[in-house]
Length: 115
Length: 114
Image 1 (cartoon, rainbow over the protein chains, first blue to last red):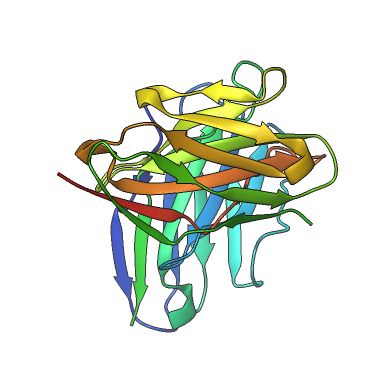
Image 2 (image 1 turned 60 degrees about the vertical axis):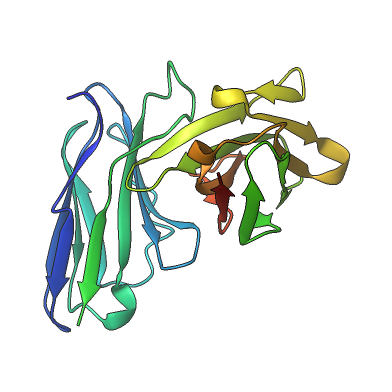
């Protein structure tokens, strides 16, 4: 597609439920990132995928968070047993490290509200 | 660890005023620096970037930023703002072998009154 897409755009869930967020990167982009933006704060790095390399999971805040990516396509971010502090906008970005080094293209985000 | 500090949380200006948004980072090695902008209801988008060379970089919509290595700063400037510049601005840094992940500042909300 023309840009990074994310779904759903909004998600309201109850505390303790699991949620799955989806990201479709720009076609051909080898690198994919997930960030979290809490209200009034900057973006916080969560996880990074680059091709077939092992993902950099250093930003995941707890073992309730996990993410997968198949090849150079769609990625899903899963949050298990959601807590109220997980409420945030979850942003996905992709980049082609060969042609536009580190210029990350962002999706519209998924706004997660945990009640 | 890298960190980025943006000095102002909210800046309010009138049209035609000059703008300077401060950004300081902490990282001792080679860095790549970015300013991203998020207009109301829109995605984050790249405003400008510095990789190497001329420390004064020009971006879209008349914005520019100056990399001052000795001050670990990358301030964003625009000589004359417009109402359409109302947005949130984020400074970000990539350094070392962090595989491309960006460290962002907390953002500055710019409100421009017509």
